Image: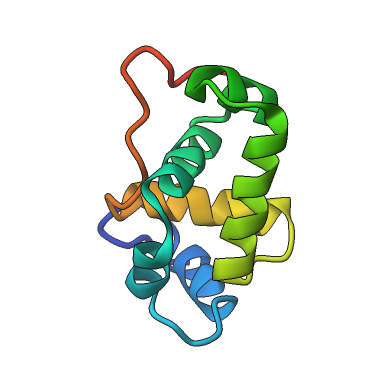
Length: 105
C-alpha cells in the first residue's frame, strides 16, 4: 500500500476509479452538480443524511435523491463506495464547500 500526495491509499483512489465505468475520477466529479458535491463533502465530514438535510435546509427525501443521483452518475453501488468517493473527492479538492462550523455531525 502506498500513499499518494493527498495522503490517501492509492488503492482507494484506484478502487473508486474502477467503479466509474472507465471515466477518469476528475471527469466523473465534473458531472456532479454543486449541490451533489456539497452532499459529498458533508458525507466525507461524517454527517448522517438527516444532519445533511438540516444543514443544507433540505428534506431528508431530497438528500436521498441527491445520493441516488450521485450513485447513478458515478456507478458506486453501496454506502462504502459512496463514502470512499466522498473522501477521495475531498482529497482532490473537488468536494463541495461545507460551511465553516458544520464539519461535525
